[in-house]
Image (tube, rainbow, N blue to C red):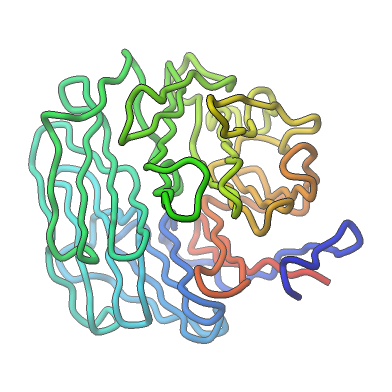
Amino acid sequence: MPLTSISAQNTASINILSQGNKTSIRGLSVVSDKIIWVSGSNGMVGKSTDGGINIQWMQVPGFEKRDFRDIEAYSDKVAIIMAIAEPAMILKTKDGGNNWYTVFTDSTKGMFLDAMHAYGKTIQVVGDPINGKAFFALSNNEGEGWHAHLKDGIPLQEGEAFFASSGSNLQIVSSENQFKSGTWMVTGGKASRIINVRDQRDSYALPLLQGKESTGANSIDISPSGKFAFIVGGDFARDTIREGNAVKVVFGKSISFTKPITPPHGYRSSVVYLNENTLISCGTSGVDISRDGGMNWDNISKLGFHVVQKAKKGNAVFLAGGGGRIARLLFE
């Protein structure tokens, strides 16, 4: 069913495609309705070329004890994975995962990469603060070469950092077809903000639960029109608490925030727009859908997931989480 035709009468459900293995999946990249990649703990990567009916699992040699917290894929052959923590490493494959090679490594003490986002050939990576400043690395050639920005990172407040929960706490926004350009990132911990990486003067405190290491923003997505964004988070240590777990962002001459009337049903680590009005959000305590731009949310599953993504080219929506769980969102 085309996402533009989703209405309140369409029933949303979760179809489990895979579960039961020992990898916790936090990286998910949906290239098309058929091609999906996932990455997770124990050096595991998964790939499907038939919409998740069959999933090929592979353990990257030499990385059996590493956690691939995020993945960006361009096709069934080309993908980039991000390993935590010290040393931080980024690997790439051009042959569908048969062989991987290192394209970035950094052994700086405290180095912990949290997320990456690709827009065309550009890939932006964000990491926890080094000497009080957010770490950034940028590639303009599909991950082949990287420029690190240790010295000019954005200063963060005491106890403010990023969550590597779903690889979705930053979004590159095109100036050509979006209302507000730049790379937007959201922070969490003892302080929670939305910050424009390119213009740091665009920095705003978020009206979300914060003040503890387990609180704050986890994920941001920009609406198709570029006029809005939606941010989710909460407290992962109390994952059924609905207080301060979501906010809608309105871009204009300045930024304004609108809290949901009926928020998601607990801590949420990932959110994605399916169209201008329909959003899906997930966390360890379940999955929610909104059909009115994020103002009211209905719970559609109590199953826990870390990340949800829509196909870059297509309409399919997939989710992934602990225990190797991969699912597809269905509408009837």
